[in-house]
Image 1 (cartoon, rainbow, N blue to C red):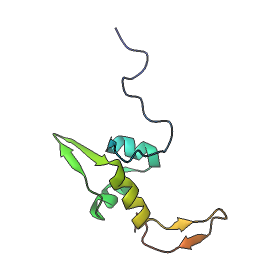
Image 2 (image 1 turned 45 degrees about the vertical axis):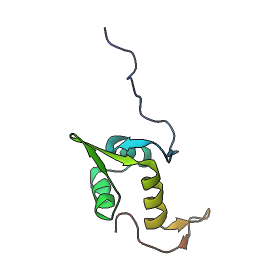
Image 3 (image 1 turned 120 degrees about the vertical axis):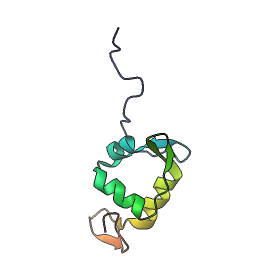
Length: 88
């Protein structure tokens, strides 16, 4: 018998829980990123825990990485704080 919905559906909001573990597919869905962007984040120092063939990222590590590597943009769309971007 097939279930009508997946056991663990993809998240519907982009709130990252600091004490949760996320796999790379969930992270891609949260931030609408492709595989290359995730790879670049890992190369820039995003810690990844590997279990078997699956990679997991701790929520607080995601938050810390985004705050450290991404520029701050104000409500008018202008850059407030300069810094390295995730893709750079």
